[in-house]
Length: 420
Ligand code: PMP
Image (cartoon, rainbow, N blue to C red; front, side, top):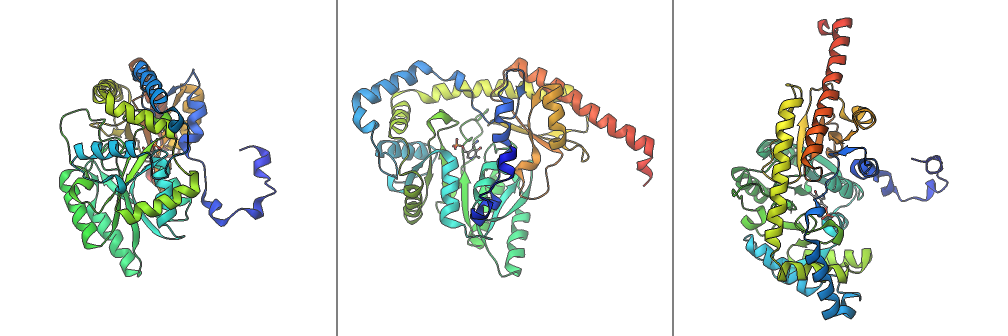
């Protein structure tokens, strides 16, 4: 933060809600992680270098030739009908049946999170999330002054008993949760998928406690095997569902969507009118063209195979170079895995050394919790760095972590702290 910002003469003018606004650790790392001398596991970027750029040029040209004036004009706040039809079809292929008027197009999933916060959250409302959960969701809900509770996970996803416990605790205090937000498939940040058994149990609890649930599903189609678990929305159509074109096509088009019952869509529409009037008419048409006229699934499959190879290299390298008391997830899809180090390793404190000395960037785990957890954890992205960078980066990171552990052991031995 620059000195001018620290001595902010407008300080007394800001709305109370700005006290909860803070920069996301990932956004902060974006610049440093883009330096050519750094191997970055910090981003959440799909590999747009592997997209069929000629096809995108062709689709863009076609759109401008066919519908130039409309593509360069404002459009409806709920989104271009052609794209909503395309979303409805994509969802139907995934066993979720929604009409076009149950869909609103947003500027990526991130705007969907902001608009959902805008229409549902009053200050101090209780929101439940997985611990760890997507940092951008925590950031969006916090900006509406929510009280966020992170619920624990294991390798099969959310622990349902912890959800019941949280709901009962709230009940005792005469409170309710406004909603629960979940990334059930190949989650950001862990890569963990909620098992089918737990999905069924979760839906029972949601029903029993009359709890609104939001399913955010950007990574479902980045699957490394044929095993497919049905989405929560396909099992229960009272859920709010969020999708995005960022990971199955391009984050640069900034397009996502929400599918929800009509009254909710109407409120989101009012919120969107105030936010940006409408999403880009041009990119909505380019995405519509790409998803209706081209074999996008073939391109996505190729990209996913690349991610799988990179995940494999990352897992092998972790086995080889990380200390034996470190643990990590083994994601069956998506872009990320999650590493847990011995309790005393503080990954936020270690980051400066990692960037300056090892020249490796990662995201410290605490960013993904609404509470004090995750200090000894880190999120690693495997979709963007190439295989050589992954094995070299994990080697350097492993060396740094081992030296941190050794340093601690030297201290504990010397000061005899183990006898306390
Ligand atoms: N939800 C989740 C779970 C994400 O991981 C992301 C981005 N990485 C988003 C939403 C927002 O992405 P976008 O706005 O590009 O759709």
